[in-house]
Image 1 (tube, rainbow, N blue to C red):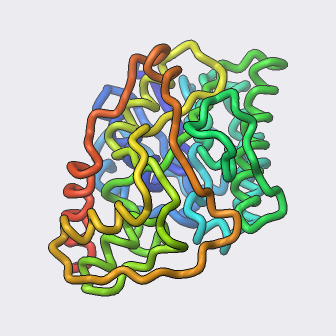
Image 2 (cartoon, rainbow, N blue to C red; image 1 turned 60 degrees about the vertical axis):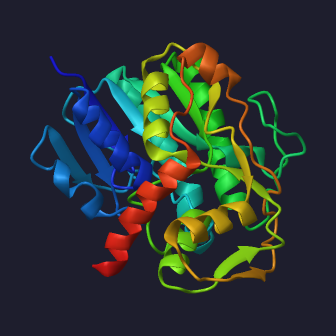
Image 3 (cartoon, rainbow, N blue to C red; image 1 turned 90 degrees about the horizontal axis):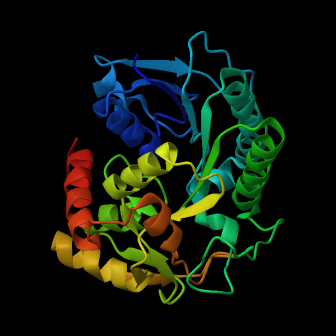
Length: 312
C-alpha cells in the first residue's frame, strides 16, 4: 500500500514543494492549511494526483479518518513580517498546533517531523552554528514570538519522543529560497528581486554586513526527505553553509536581473541576527546530504518565477 503523509502548512512555500516531491516519490499526500500565509495556487496543480487538501487550523483538534505513516509539521508564519503581524497566531501554532499534531502522530503511530528553524539560535555568539549550541534569544523581543514558539515546539517534540516513544525528527531549517515565495514576503531575496525587477531602490537594513546562508528549495526538500526516512531523532541543521553578506546578495541580484536599481540603507531591526551559517556536519554524516544548487543558479530560477508573478 502507498504510504500516506500529512503536511500541516502544506500550501506554504516549503510545504507545497515538499508535497509535490513526495507525490513524485509515490506517497499519498494530505495537505492541511488555514491559508493564513499559504496559498491555494501553490498546490492547485496537485489536485489531479493522489492529493487531498483540508482547510483547517491545526491549533484546533485534528481529525483524519485515514491511516498516516508520517506527519510533517510545517504550519506557522515564517517570515519576520508575517510573525510580527501575527504574533499570537505564531505562538499558538508553535505550541497548541504542535501539541495537536504530536497527539495525532501518537494516535496513528506515525513518524513526526517538526519544521524548526535556525532562529532557535537567535543572534548567535558562535559561528557557524552547530546543533549543540543553545542559542542567544531575546524572549520578549519582536522576533521572540517566532523564536520561542519554535524552541517550545522542539521541547514538546522531544518530550513526546521520550515519554510516548513517538518517532520524531527535528529539522532546523536555515534560510531557504525559490519559486512560490510571496512577493510581499518581506524576506531579503524576494524583496530584492521584486525591487530590482521594478527598477526600485533595494532596501538593505543596516550596513549590509550581516550574513546569511541561502539554500535553494530543491536542496532543502531533498534534505527533509532524507531526514524523514532516517532513524535520527534529535535536531539537525539543514541549510547551505555558503555564507554571504546581505549587501553581496543585493548586488548579485542587481547583476542577475540587469537592473539599474540603487541600494539604500535602512535602520537595522531590533535583534536582527548579525551572522547565520549552518554547520551541516551531522546532515552530511547521518543523512548523506549536502546542497548541490549554487546561489547563482538558484537565484536565476527564482528571478524567472518573480518575472512571471509581477507580469501577471
